[in-house]
Amino acid sequence: MVQSTQEVQKREALHPIETERTRMRKVFVPAVDIYETKDKIVLNADVPGGDEKSVNITLEKNVLTITVEVEPIDYPGYTASHVEYDTGDYQRSFTISDEVDQNNIEATVKNGVLKVTMHKSEKAKVKTIPIKTE
Amino acid sequence: MFGRTYWRLGQDPFQELHQLQRGMDRLFSNMRDTLAVGEYPAINALTGKESVILTAELPGINPDKLNIAVQNDTLSISGSRDIDALKEGEVYHRQERSHGQFSRTIKLPFNANPEKVDASYKKGILSITLQRSEADKPKKIAIKSE
Image (cartoon, rainbow over all chains, first blue to last red; front, side, top):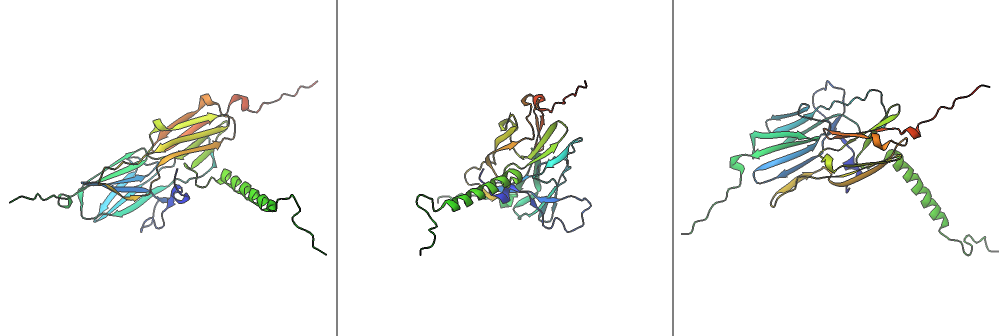
């Protein structure tokens, strides 16, 4: 797999949030892919351990914030003997441009990947102007 | 009159360098075994009485394309992770998620029973439960009194 160490390791959030947290939990910055198609912008975020109940997406003004509260899985009768990754919450914010229709944002979670589909507003869509011949 | 010739005939002048290199290789290979820096996926292990649970964060994987093989005390996981394919004219603004083939082999603390391997994939987390094989379990030796 072509990737460097930094990409493999989970990135811990530097300043998770401005307000004090009530949960004593590590906060990670999820890795994301963002791509743009003709009529939408799609964001895919890796949030292993997150499901539709634990993912929270808020949109305030132009800032889209993803918060995932991951409950650590408990294995009674077992003790951790080798730890390579840490479990914690995920949080990341994105500034969205005006071209996104804020009332038309969909989100799904599947296999620990959060997909946020932001549809472009009508006025932002590329219009082709037909040229008439005289 | 002449000082002692350091390199005798027939002796590799780089022998010491080679020795040093071998030493370094050994040092780093040991580190890889214990720390496994940069290995994908990262694996956590939980040990029970006669079993071990391995967990790995593998978001966005088709579990049908995941291969798990157990042989004696070796477990190997391999698969691939795909990202959304783009059509013409579409562009990735940001690409942080890793994709492509991966495989990892790890050594278990015991010989596992290949018949009793239980794997599940939920919320992007793979967990594999392995049982110690009967033949591998320590045997209690009864002491007879005369």
